[in-house]
Image 1 (cartoon, rainbow, N blue to C red):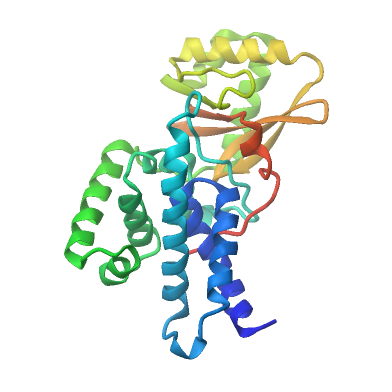
Image 2 (cartoon, rainbow, N blue to C red):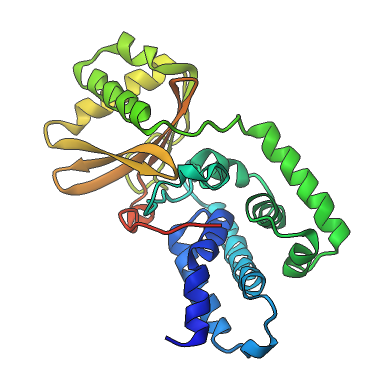
Length: 293
């Protein structure tokens, strides 16, 4: 392996995580890393003082280019847009900052930032790069980056509930109980496991059947899930998993992958369902990813 490849491979989990948190797409993050490596392979290593900072800068710039192109595509997207679910090789919950940074709830909030604000927030709050390094990366003054970091932090904090590290055993039990109740039509049992203002958000881009708008409220969500279970019929099955450091269910009809539903638990009850049904975004959901910071 060449020295270029060795240095890049050692930092790949960190570089993938930067790209994913800026883009919300594992597939596009793979493309960004491939493009970044091709550029890196042409660099004279004797002129690189800090490999981590250099590669983070390179990947961030490529990710921002991809994000701006993605923003244009979202203008014609049908229904809610959700990040691609991320299957991690190891449970990142030991690193609470990393676990929160890839959580679906955090990524949904990051969608509301401008591309530059999103890059600044990710590089500063998650990866701890200093303002000078970030300024060089995005082509802004250090003073402008400080202001952007402050604005982005306030924006995220005002929209993001306190992150609760997941108790895997409790979450798995709650998820299993919920779908058992759905299968038996136990409406009251279902509602008891949901927060009053629970939200079901589904991403399909109109390619398959799914709610085009978020469904809000315990009774409405419970009735909808019971309906989905009935429609699935005897061929339907679910398998528990962990995606984006949260409990999830992988949905199948026979052997056909139908979707991935991520579950956000708050104060012991389910507060959010994020249902990925878009076939394009399900293409690589079974591929485990290494993340890091």
